[in-house]
Image (cartoon, rainbow, N blue to C red; front, side, top):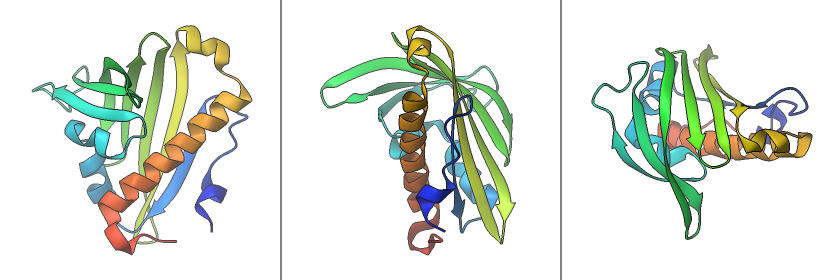
Length: 160
């Protein structure tokens, strides 16, 4: 099945995207739960500046720069909940546009994993833009993030 076909319908609340991985949930989650690795796979993340010593405990943060080209914003992401190797919930802040809740779920599937990213805006001016088009763009961005994550975790063994 084509990767794009796995992208969930963005007409529902929030944006959802999922992909199969050849690796087991523990291998996927090792990268997802590493605060220093987010700039390696999350589209728009330019660099991670610092990770709290308490990471990955709920309430801990990693501090990052996001942006495109020369335009960057320094902000932080809070870990809201974690259930290794199945789920991590993050509160992402990108000021001045607002805050969102991102849930990354990892489930066993055919000897590998199915990884789902769900992103919902929770506050800020970006809520005004929370339209079908905005959710579609977010879903496509998250699908690309999943492809990057899969290249890191699976290497050349990724299911096609």
